[in-house]
Length: 313
Image (cartoon, rainbow, N blue to C red):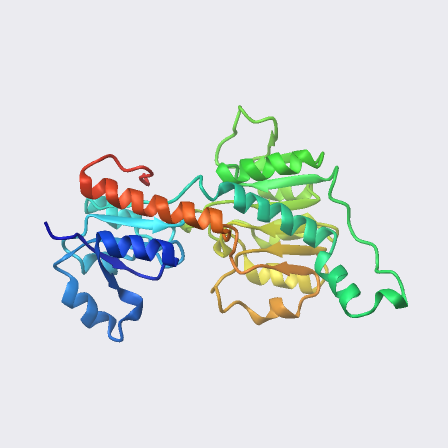
């Protein structure tokens, strides 16, 4: 029996590629010099797409693959996958939730601590020999502060647990209240920002949340506020955020996500009140291995006729 043929939009770690190559005929789209010709050559044989969250699968790509049955995404975010087209054409979609939740929440807490306690500045103060000339300036406490979480899904809930361990007071914004959680629901983002010392965004991306953290929300956080984003760059009015950071209208930010990644706005690099990460919330060996295994297990389940492990609605 011939192996199913899978189109990959971008590479996975070696441990995943070796397993995929042993099970399937893998077509490496990112290596093609002529994308259109490559797709035309393999269009009638490809039954699956293995993609990454930031690469997704557009309607245009899926239209070119008439035998396509499933899109398996390495990542939890599906905002770059045209879910409507997939649904209307009977194409299954899977992602990798849960396995990355704790690592993303860890990084969110790390970014908050790093931005508030100015850990990069402290590191530079020691390395640059400034310590012998005098003590570093004072920073901001995290414990006991008021934290507003924007989005209370898996990652938001995991982050809230961590902040609660720092004796922070938690409030949150979500589409609907979560009565099983011991935190205060605030249905207005401006009001949430106004009552928070730190505002942490954990929302899913997509058109429904695009720019939801507006300039008005950022200004409501105030000059002592710290902003953390571990969701998607699209959830924030990035120009307004940059203006607020440059003008000192908020104290600082810890950011793992941006618009136009990885070619982000150069204004970020000039800021001294930010801690920046390369969209690395899930970037641990343990989580990336679990993500890859879940992609591979979903593909194996599909081609064997078994129920998918993590189908996207």
